[in-house]
Image 1 (cartoon, rainbow, N blue to C red):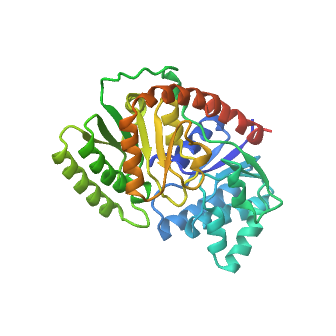
Image 2: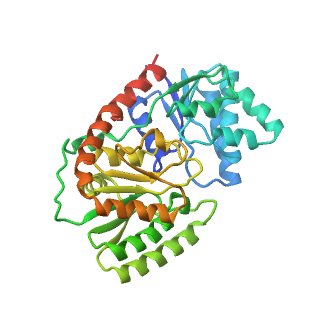
Image 3: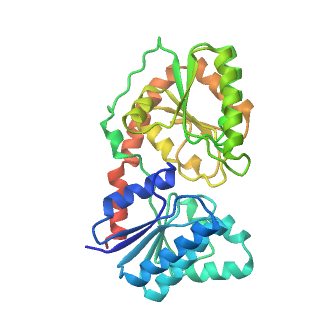
Length: 360
Protein backbone atom coordinates (compact mmCIF):
# COMPACT_ATOMS: atom_id res chain seq x y z
CA UNK A 1 0.00 0.00 0.00
CA UNK A 2 1.60 3.23 -1.16
CA UNK A 3 1.99 6.16 1.16
CA UNK A 4 0.95 9.11 -0.99
CA UNK A 5 0.91 12.80 -0.11
CA UNK A 6 -1.84 14.58 -2.04
CA UNK A 7 -1.59 18.36 -2.40
CA UNK A 8 -4.41 20.20 -4.15
CA UNK A 9 -7.77 21.92 -3.67
CA UNK A 10 -10.63 20.05 -2.02
CA UNK A 11 -14.27 21.03 -2.54
CA UNK A 12 -15.88 23.42 -1.84
CA UNK A 13 -15.54 25.66 -3.80
CA UNK A 14 -16.45 23.58 -6.82
CA UNK A 15 -14.10 24.04 -9.75
CA UNK A 16 -12.91 21.58 -12.37
CA UNK A 17 -9.60 21.26 -10.57
CA UNK A 18 -11.10 20.68 -7.12
CA UNK A 19 -13.64 18.14 -8.43
CA UNK A 20 -10.91 16.21 -10.24
CA UNK A 21 -8.60 16.34 -7.21
CA UNK A 22 -11.39 15.05 -4.95
CA UNK A 23 -11.94 12.09 -7.28
CA UNK A 24 -8.24 11.18 -7.17
CA UNK A 25 -8.01 11.44 -3.38
CA UNK A 26 -11.21 9.43 -2.93
CA UNK A 27 -9.96 6.63 -5.17
CA UNK A 28 -6.27 6.38 -4.29
CA UNK A 29 -6.23 7.62 -0.71
CA UNK A 30 -5.74 5.19 2.18
CA UNK A 31 -4.99 5.27 5.89
CA UNK A 32 -1.31 5.90 5.17
CA UNK A 33 -2.04 8.85 2.89
CA UNK A 34 -2.12 12.50 3.85
CA UNK A 35 -3.89 15.39 2.14
CA UNK A 36 -2.82 19.02 2.13
CA UNK A 37 -5.79 21.14 1.08
CA UNK A 38 -4.69 24.32 -0.75
CA UNK A 39 -8.18 25.81 -1.15
CA UNK A 40 -9.22 28.84 0.86
CA UNK A 41 -8.34 32.50 1.10
CA UNK A 42 -4.89 33.42 -0.22
CA UNK A 43 -3.60 35.75 2.45
CA UNK A 44 -0.01 36.19 3.55
CA UNK A 45 -0.69 34.56 6.92
CA UNK A 46 -2.59 31.58 5.46
CA UNK A 47 0.15 31.12 2.87
CA UNK A 48 2.82 31.07 5.57
CA UNK A 49 0.84 28.58 7.67
CA UNK A 50 0.38 26.35 4.62
CA UNK A 51 4.09 26.40 3.79
CA UNK A 52 4.96 25.46 7.38
CA UNK A 53 2.44 22.60 7.17
CA UNK A 54 4.04 21.35 3.96
CA UNK A 55 7.54 21.41 5.48
CA UNK A 56 6.50 19.68 8.71
CA UNK A 57 4.46 17.04 6.86
CA UNK A 58 7.39 16.12 4.60
CA UNK A 59 9.98 16.20 7.40
CA UNK A 60 7.95 14.15 9.87
CA UNK A 61 6.60 11.53 7.44
CA UNK A 62 8.01 9.21 4.82
CA UNK A 63 6.09 9.08 1.53
CA UNK A 64 6.45 6.86 -1.49
CA UNK A 65 4.98 9.48 -3.82
CA UNK A 66 3.68 13.05 -3.93
CA UNK A 67 0.78 13.94 -6.22
CA UNK A 68 -0.02 17.63 -6.63
CA UNK A 69 -1.94 20.00 -8.89
CA UNK A 70 0.43 22.79 -9.80
CA UNK A 71 -0.38 26.46 -9.42
CA UNK A 72 -0.02 29.06 -12.18
CA UNK A 73 0.17 32.17 -10.02
CA UNK A 74 3.11 33.71 -8.20
CA UNK A 75 1.57 33.38 -4.74
CA UNK A 76 0.32 29.85 -5.32
CA UNK A 77 3.60 28.71 -6.82
CA UNK A 78 5.46 29.53 -3.60
CA UNK A 79 3.84 26.56 -1.82
CA UNK A 80 4.71 24.37 -4.83
CA UNK A 81 8.34 25.49 -4.64
CA UNK A 82 8.45 24.74 -0.92
CA UNK A 83 6.99 21.26 -1.50
CA UNK A 84 9.22 20.47 -4.51
CA UNK A 85 12.34 21.65 -2.67
CA UNK A 86 11.54 19.39 0.30
CA UNK A 87 10.70 16.51 -2.05
CA UNK A 88 14.07 16.76 -3.80
CA UNK A 89 15.87 16.88 -0.47
CA UNK A 90 13.90 13.86 0.81
CA UNK A 91 14.19 12.10 -2.59
CA UNK A 92 10.43 11.55 -2.88
CA UNK A 93 9.09 11.01 -6.46
CA UNK A 94 6.63 13.70 -7.55
CA UNK A 95 3.75 13.55 -10.03
CA UNK A 96 2.28 16.85 -11.19
CA UNK A 97 -1.22 17.23 -12.68
CA UNK A 98 -1.82 20.37 -14.75
CA UNK A 99 -5.48 21.40 -14.88
CA UNK A 100 -5.12 24.89 -16.35
CA UNK A 101 -3.94 26.17 -19.69
CA UNK A 102 -1.60 28.93 -18.59
CA UNK A 103 1.51 27.43 -16.96
CA UNK A 104 3.79 28.55 -19.81
CA UNK A 105 2.49 32.12 -19.62
CA UNK A 106 3.03 32.15 -15.86
CA UNK A 107 6.57 30.74 -16.23
CA UNK A 108 7.58 33.28 -18.87
CA UNK A 109 6.17 36.26 -16.96
CA UNK A 110 7.93 35.74 -13.62
CA UNK A 111 11.29 37.40 -12.80
CA UNK A 112 14.41 35.60 -14.05
CA UNK A 113 15.66 34.76 -10.56
CA UNK A 114 12.37 33.08 -9.66
CA UNK A 115 12.15 31.35 -13.03
CA UNK A 116 15.50 29.69 -12.32
CA UNK A 117 14.22 28.52 -8.95
CA UNK A 118 11.01 27.16 -10.53
CA UNK A 119 13.07 25.41 -13.21
CA UNK A 120 15.28 23.67 -10.66
CA UNK A 121 12.26 22.54 -8.67
CA UNK A 122 10.26 21.26 -11.64
CA UNK A 123 13.27 19.41 -13.02
CA UNK A 124 12.77 17.17 -10.00
CA UNK A 125 9.21 16.24 -11.07
CA UNK A 126 9.11 12.60 -12.22
CA UNK A 127 6.08 13.04 -14.48
CA UNK A 128 3.50 15.66 -15.40
CA UNK A 129 -0.04 14.83 -16.49
CA UNK A 130 -1.71 17.10 -19.05
CA UNK A 131 -5.24 16.97 -20.41
CA UNK A 132 -4.61 17.14 -24.17
CA UNK A 133 -1.71 16.66 -26.60
CA UNK A 134 -1.63 20.41 -27.22
CA UNK A 135 -1.13 21.04 -23.50
CA UNK A 136 2.30 19.39 -23.65
CA UNK A 137 3.50 22.75 -24.91
CA UNK A 138 2.89 24.19 -21.44
CA UNK A 139 6.08 22.40 -20.32
CA UNK A 140 8.21 23.11 -23.39
CA UNK A 141 10.85 24.65 -21.12
CA UNK A 142 11.35 21.29 -19.39
CA UNK A 143 12.50 18.95 -22.19
CA UNK A 144 13.56 16.23 -19.75
CA UNK A 145 10.13 16.01 -18.08
CA UNK A 146 8.00 12.97 -18.87
CA UNK A 147 4.56 14.06 -20.07
CA UNK A 148 1.44 11.91 -20.15
CA UNK A 149 -1.94 12.85 -21.63
CA UNK A 150 -4.98 11.85 -19.56
CA UNK A 151 -8.25 13.65 -20.46
CA UNK A 152 -10.62 14.73 -17.72
CA UNK A 153 -13.73 12.68 -17.02
CA UNK A 154 -17.32 13.13 -15.97
CA UNK A 155 -18.36 11.85 -12.55
CA UNK A 156 -19.45 8.22 -12.23
CA UNK A 157 -22.64 9.59 -10.61
CA UNK A 158 -23.83 10.38 -14.14
CA UNK A 159 -23.74 6.69 -15.07
CA UNK A 160 -27.18 6.51 -13.48
CA UNK A 161 -28.50 8.47 -16.48
CA UNK A 162 -30.05 6.57 -19.41
CA UNK A 163 -28.00 5.92 -22.53
CA UNK A 164 -30.71 7.26 -24.83
CA UNK A 165 -32.46 10.62 -24.70
CA UNK A 166 -35.82 11.40 -26.28
CA UNK A 167 -36.81 15.03 -26.72
CA UNK A 168 -40.43 16.16 -26.85
CA UNK A 169 -40.56 18.55 -29.86
CA UNK A 170 -43.59 20.32 -28.40
CA UNK A 171 -41.70 21.48 -25.31
CA UNK A 172 -39.58 24.65 -25.18
CA UNK A 173 -35.86 24.19 -25.71
CA UNK A 174 -34.11 24.21 -22.33
CA UNK A 175 -30.82 26.14 -22.34
CA UNK A 176 -28.50 25.72 -19.34
CA UNK A 177 -25.57 27.74 -17.98
CA UNK A 178 -23.90 25.69 -15.22
CA UNK A 179 -20.68 27.26 -14.03
CA UNK A 180 -19.43 29.86 -11.59
CA UNK A 181 -20.98 33.31 -12.13
CA UNK A 182 -17.86 35.07 -13.45
CA UNK A 183 -17.40 37.73 -16.09
CA UNK A 184 -14.66 35.70 -17.80
CA UNK A 185 -16.94 32.66 -17.96
CA UNK A 186 -19.18 34.78 -20.18
CA UNK A 187 -22.33 35.03 -18.06
CA UNK A 188 -22.92 38.72 -18.87
CA UNK A 189 -22.39 38.08 -22.58
CA UNK A 190 -24.90 35.25 -22.41
CA UNK A 191 -27.55 37.43 -20.80
CA UNK A 192 -27.06 40.10 -23.47
CA UNK A 193 -27.33 37.47 -26.21
CA UNK A 194 -30.39 35.88 -24.62
CA UNK A 195 -32.09 39.27 -24.46
CA UNK A 196 -31.83 39.48 -28.25
CA UNK A 197 -32.89 35.86 -28.82
CA UNK A 198 -35.80 36.00 -26.35
CA UNK A 199 -37.22 38.93 -28.32
CA UNK A 200 -37.24 36.86 -31.54
CA UNK A 201 -38.19 33.38 -30.29
CA UNK A 202 -40.56 32.18 -27.61
CA UNK A 203 -39.71 28.46 -27.78
CA UNK A 204 -36.82 28.36 -25.32
CA UNK A 205 -36.02 28.96 -21.67
CA UNK A 206 -32.76 29.66 -19.82
CA UNK A 207 -31.67 28.16 -16.49
CA UNK A 208 -28.59 29.52 -14.69
CA UNK A 209 -26.81 27.64 -11.91
CA UNK A 210 -23.68 28.70 -10.04
CA UNK A 211 -22.46 31.23 -7.49
CA UNK A 212 -20.79 34.62 -8.02
CA UNK A 213 -16.99 34.50 -7.91
CA UNK A 214 -14.58 37.36 -8.60
CA UNK A 215 -11.98 37.41 -11.36
CA UNK A 216 -9.49 39.91 -12.77
CA UNK A 217 -12.29 41.99 -14.33
CA UNK A 218 -14.93 41.95 -11.61
CA UNK A 219 -14.82 41.45 -7.87
CA UNK A 220 -17.32 39.04 -6.34
CA UNK A 221 -19.56 41.91 -5.20
CA UNK A 222 -19.39 43.64 -8.59
CA UNK A 223 -20.22 40.57 -10.68
CA UNK A 224 -23.02 39.75 -8.25
CA UNK A 225 -24.49 43.24 -8.71
CA UNK A 226 -24.17 43.19 -12.51
CA UNK A 227 -25.59 39.69 -12.79
CA UNK A 228 -28.64 40.27 -10.63
CA UNK A 229 -29.39 43.59 -12.33
CA UNK A 230 -29.49 41.76 -15.69
CA UNK A 231 -31.41 38.86 -14.22
CA UNK A 232 -34.12 41.04 -12.70
CA UNK A 233 -34.49 43.00 -15.95
CA UNK A 234 -34.84 39.85 -18.07
CA UNK A 235 -37.24 38.31 -15.55
CA UNK A 236 -39.53 41.32 -15.89
CA UNK A 237 -39.30 41.44 -19.68
CA UNK A 238 -39.75 37.69 -20.19
CA UNK A 239 -41.67 36.24 -17.22
CA UNK A 240 -41.20 32.53 -16.62
CA UNK A 241 -38.47 32.15 -19.25
CA UNK A 242 -35.36 32.64 -17.11
CA UNK A 243 -34.56 31.20 -13.69
CA UNK A 244 -31.59 31.35 -11.35
CA UNK A 245 -30.98 28.27 -9.19
CA UNK A 246 -27.85 29.17 -7.24
CA UNK A 247 -25.47 26.33 -6.45
CA UNK A 248 -26.71 22.88 -7.44
CA UNK A 249 -25.15 19.50 -6.70
CA UNK A 250 -25.90 15.79 -6.41
CA UNK A 251 -29.16 14.49 -7.81
CA UNK A 252 -30.47 18.02 -8.43
CA UNK A 253 -27.51 18.77 -10.68
CA UNK A 254 -27.86 15.50 -12.58
CA UNK A 255 -31.57 16.07 -13.15
CA UNK A 256 -30.93 19.64 -14.28
CA UNK A 257 -28.38 18.47 -16.85
CA UNK A 258 -30.64 15.67 -18.07
CA UNK A 259 -33.64 17.98 -18.47
CA UNK A 260 -31.61 20.45 -20.54
CA UNK A 261 -31.16 20.46 -24.31
CA UNK A 262 -28.38 23.00 -24.82
CA UNK A 263 -25.41 23.59 -22.54
CA UNK A 264 -23.83 27.00 -22.99
CA UNK A 265 -20.43 28.11 -21.69
CA UNK A 266 -19.30 31.33 -23.44
CA UNK A 267 -15.97 31.39 -21.63
CA UNK A 268 -12.92 33.52 -22.33
CA UNK A 269 -11.28 32.53 -19.04
CA UNK A 270 -7.47 32.66 -19.58
CA UNK A 271 -6.75 29.41 -17.73
CA UNK A 272 -9.49 27.39 -19.46
CA UNK A 273 -8.31 23.94 -20.47
CA UNK A 274 -10.67 20.94 -20.49
CA UNK A 275 -13.88 21.90 -18.63
CA UNK A 276 -15.46 19.01 -16.74
CA UNK A 277 -18.81 20.78 -17.05
CA UNK A 278 -18.70 20.20 -20.81
CA UNK A 279 -18.04 16.48 -20.29
CA UNK A 280 -21.00 16.29 -17.90
CA UNK A 281 -23.19 18.03 -20.47
CA UNK A 282 -22.06 15.61 -23.19
CA UNK A 283 -22.92 12.60 -21.03
CA UNK A 284 -26.40 13.98 -20.40
CA UNK A 285 -27.09 14.51 -24.09
CA UNK A 286 -26.76 18.26 -24.38
CA UNK A 287 -25.83 20.21 -27.49
CA UNK A 288 -22.66 22.14 -26.55
CA UNK A 289 -22.49 25.86 -27.31
CA UNK A 290 -19.14 27.25 -26.21
CA UNK A 291 -16.17 29.30 -27.42
CA UNK A 292 -13.22 28.67 -29.71
CA UNK A 293 -10.88 29.30 -26.82
CA UNK A 294 -7.71 27.68 -25.48
CA UNK A 295 -8.04 23.87 -25.57
CA UNK A 296 -11.84 23.61 -25.84
CA UNK A 297 -11.74 22.75 -29.60
CA UNK A 298 -10.12 19.44 -28.63
CA UNK A 299 -13.50 18.43 -27.13
CA UNK A 300 -16.14 20.37 -29.06
CA UNK A 301 -16.69 20.42 -32.81
CA UNK A 302 -19.60 20.70 -35.25
CA UNK A 303 -20.28 17.02 -34.53
CA UNK A 304 -21.41 17.72 -30.98
CA UNK A 305 -22.14 21.43 -30.83
CA UNK A 306 -20.82 24.78 -31.97
CA UNK A 307 -17.88 27.03 -31.24
CA UNK A 308 -18.30 30.80 -31.31
CA UNK A 309 -15.83 33.66 -31.02
CA UNK A 310 -14.88 34.46 -27.42
CA UNK A 311 -16.27 37.69 -25.99
CA UNK A 312 -18.76 38.14 -28.85
CA UNK A 313 -22.42 38.76 -28.05
CA UNK A 314 -23.23 38.85 -31.77
CA UNK A 315 -21.78 35.39 -32.43
CA UNK A 316 -23.44 33.93 -29.37
CA UNK A 317 -26.83 35.41 -30.24
CA UNK A 318 -26.59 34.12 -33.82
CA UNK A 319 -25.72 30.63 -32.60
CA UNK A 320 -28.72 30.61 -30.27
CA UNK A 321 -30.96 31.79 -33.11
CA UNK A 322 -29.67 29.02 -35.39
CA UNK A 323 -30.52 26.43 -32.73
CA UNK A 324 -34.03 27.83 -32.40
CA UNK A 325 -34.46 27.62 -36.20
CA UNK A 326 -33.29 23.99 -36.36
CA UNK A 327 -34.44 22.22 -33.17
CA UNK A 328 -34.52 18.88 -35.02
CA UNK A 329 -30.71 18.74 -34.76
CA UNK A 330 -30.87 18.44 -30.97
CA UNK A 331 -32.28 14.91 -30.92
CA UNK A 332 -29.55 13.34 -33.06
CA UNK A 333 -26.73 15.25 -31.39
CA UNK A 334 -28.07 14.36 -27.94
CA UNK A 335 -27.56 10.61 -28.41
CA UNK A 336 -24.32 11.05 -30.34
CA UNK A 337 -22.95 13.09 -27.44
CA UNK A 338 -23.97 10.48 -24.88
CA UNK A 339 -22.11 7.77 -26.81
CA UNK A 340 -19.11 10.05 -27.35
CA UNK A 341 -18.83 10.82 -23.63
CA UNK A 342 -19.29 7.19 -22.56
CA UNK A 343 -16.60 6.03 -24.98
CA UNK A 344 -14.01 8.66 -24.16
CA UNK A 345 -14.57 10.28 -20.76
CA UNK A 346 -15.91 7.84 -18.14
CA UNK A 347 -14.46 8.19 -14.66
CA UNK A 348 -13.34 4.55 -14.47
CA UNK A 349 -11.20 5.01 -17.60
CA UNK A 350 -9.68 8.18 -16.11
CA UNK A 351 -8.83 6.48 -12.81
CA UNK A 352 -7.41 3.41 -14.54
CA UNK A 353 -5.07 5.65 -16.51
CA UNK A 354 -3.92 7.30 -13.29
CA UNK A 355 -3.35 3.92 -11.63
CA UNK A 356 -0.44 3.18 -13.98
CA UNK A 357 1.22 6.38 -12.80
CA UNK A 358 0.38 6.56 -9.10
CA UNK A 359 0.57 2.88 -8.18
CA UNK A 360 3.41 1.61 -10.38
